[in-house]
Structure formats: C-alpha cells, structure tokens
Image 1 (tube, one colour):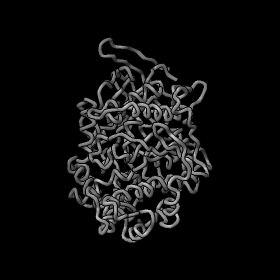
Image 2 (cartoon, rainbow, N blue to C red):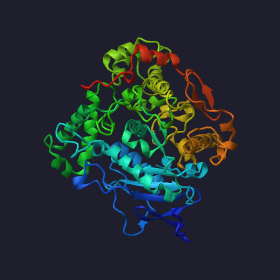
Image 3 (cartoon, one colour):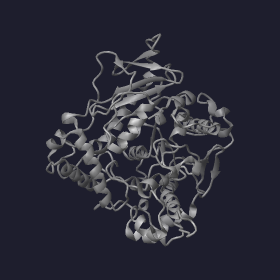
Image 4 (cartoon, rainbow, N blue to C red):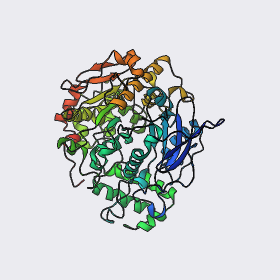
Length: 535
C-alpha cells in the first residue's frame, strides 16, 4: 500500500503516490482533500464531442489543493454554480478543460457547499470521490445519420463518468479506498446516469453498490433518433450545416451554451413522453447501452449483482411548481395548464380520475394535486414497479424522505420546509451532512440528528451492502445510533415496504397503493412498455 509521504507544517499538506504520479492535497479536521485531479485530457479541439482520453501521467507533483475548472454551464445552471462556488470560497471558473475529480478521505492508511462531503467522510468513515463531466451539447452530442460512432460516439458525458470510475479502480487504494467496494451515488440527473450504469454491461465491474436519489425513472433513455433530431437543432442554431462537425467544433462556448438551451426547448415541444428535456439523457447507443432500462429489467439484463438503495422525497414534483405554475391555477384553467406537462388525451384521463382532486374550497388545489400526482407518476410509482421486479435477483432497499431542509438553490416558498413539503433536491444537505455550513440557513438539533441517521444508514450500506448496523470489522457509529438500531430497514417485498425517513423513521407498506395501481393499470404509464423505435 502506498502511504503518506509528507505533511506540511503550516498548510497541512499531504502527498500520495498514484499510478499517474504524485499528488499533493491537504487536510482539515474532517478529511484529507485532493481537489481538481484531472482524469482525462482537455476535451477541446478535435476532442470536443469525442470520447474522453485518459490523462497522461504527471511529470511532477500535481497540486490538488484547489478545485479545478467546472464544466461550462447554461445560464440558469451558471447562477447555481456561482452560488455554490462562492460558499466553497473558491475561484474555480468554467472551462472545457473540466474533466477532473475530487477525493475526500478520512484516512490514508489504506484498506457544491450543499455537496461538500467533509462531514459524510468524517462520520461515515468512507472515501468520497466527486467528478465533473461534460454537460449539455458538449456531453450528449451525436447523430448516427451524419457520423459513424467511431467518429462521434455519443454519450460523451456518460463516457466521462466511466473513465472516472476506471481511474478510481486504478488509484483509490492510494487514498485509503477499496476498489472492490465501490458505491456509485447520484441524485436527479445524476441518478439517471446511475440507471445508465445499471444498464451498461461494460461498466458492471467498476462498482458493487448503488445509491440512487430521486431518479425520474419514468423518463426513458433517448433513442438514436431522439439524439439525431436534437443534434440537428444544435447545428441549425449554431449556423452550421447538417453534418458539419468542423463548424460545431469551431463554435464559441457561449454559442454552444445558448444553442443547448434553445435546442432543449425545441425538444420539449416535440417530446411525446414528458416535458422534461431530452438533452441530458443517456442514449441507447447499441454499444454501451443496448436498450431502455425498462426492457433490461424485464429481461434480467441489467446489473442484477449490484446492491441497491434508491428512493424519492415526499413531494418531488413540487420543485417544478414555480417553473410551470408560479401562481395558483383557477380550476377552469386546469386542463390547459396540465397540458404543459402531459399530452391532451392523458390530461383528460388524469383530470377525470380520483387522483387529481380539485375541490372548489381550495384555491391552490391544482398545484397541490399536481405535486402529489406528479410525484407518483414520475418517481414513486415507477420506482415501486421496478423494485417489485428486481427483488427476485437481490434485495432492494427503498426509501422516501419525509423531512427536508430549505434548499438555497430553490428560490420559491412553495417548497419551503415550513410548508412541510419535501421537494426535489431538498434532501441533499441532509445526505451530505452539510446543513450547518450553508450561509443563511440555520440547522436545528433535529436537522443534525436526522443527518446523522441518514449518513449512518447510507455509509453502513456503502461498507457492507446492507444499511442496517453490522458487527465485526465494518461496525461503526451506526451501531450506537438508536435512531438507526431501533428500526430495521427491510428490503422491498410483496407488501411494498419502504423506509419513511424522518427524525424517527418508520417502515410503511403499500405507500400510495391506489394511485400507483391506477397509474400502472388504468393510465398505463410509460415505464410499463418498451420505448417505441420510431420515437
């Protein structure tokens, strides 16, 4: 095992040897930190839109004491990124040379602030790696009608993630990690990428466990036809002729980001499946991903050997209320407004059901019902549907967060913690144990207590594949946390058991059963069927 080489006296610096050379990081009271380590060459010039190329070994000690570049963001995401970077007190900037990762480890002996994992590392005793990968057009650009995959392979962002996982396999032991006990973790779009990893056989040996938070699992992967159509939008918006790769590679990054936003909107207008944009979804490329996840699960062709925790928050769809419905919606306009999210026929069926109540006595009934039904439709019900099928291979642990925190990146009172709602992304601070570190957002004793429970359950799973306290070499603080030990988290079973996570968590059975049964059988939701090849 390669060991620590040097501790600095003032800057708390530390160096490790890896397969790519010597890397210098630093340590504080929570963790050793190695920041901005490049795992790929800069994806610029001829490498723009290409598969990532592994970074050449360092010729001298690499300074990993500051964050590397972040990947270019669309204007909306850029505001979020700037806020996070300000909290992190870093001057990291956007640049296409952004394929880097950060390693946080509690020990070197071997064996966003909301995304800042120092507390997760120190309490859970796990090594955490966060990665940057290409976004938007830079990460999901392809057109099989114009280029062969050997030229533009597609799924560039997904390939970035795979290369980062390969880097972990080769180097994580130098940071005290175990390459045979790797857990991949993602939230929202990151969770969709976790779904892609579960679907890509060439990646199965790169990880053993999965934690997937709030994947809108009803939304399928793109088909090559989807990707080609969006690509044509991109090229047109850039002023490039169809198939003119040189033109696209010569475009300025600002023009590419602007084209990404506009192409996404055009994709929304065309998308018969959902109003969520197609651009950031992985594509069924026939190489990495052979079919949609729904098909692979039915046929047992996903990574059935992986241990899985996945789940939702109580009010996922509330996140989208300020996007589509900033003000309460009059009942007379319910159909028109719901058609922003569902097609006309489906809207009629939904509004005629018992699962989208619009009592005249409640002036905000539409937004309340949209939040509940949208959560059921896109998140909870398909998650339970897949869990039922997948338990035949390996235990699946399913959760629902019923307690959240005010999320500084969500600028709307509809999802404020004071309302009791737990909207999409409102659990992130809790999972990372970073609630006390976010300026302007106080943390109560119950908030901290809940964060400890979540960290203890999740990190126990990371170590053992089971979120319940274990004895022996992998026992830890979870064994002394009564909030964990008093409620055994049972795997999903015929009674649809889910851990409802709160300060005092409890097991619940058949959650939202009537709604889910209707969505599966009456509405015949998309996740039950193969994605049509003409889409």
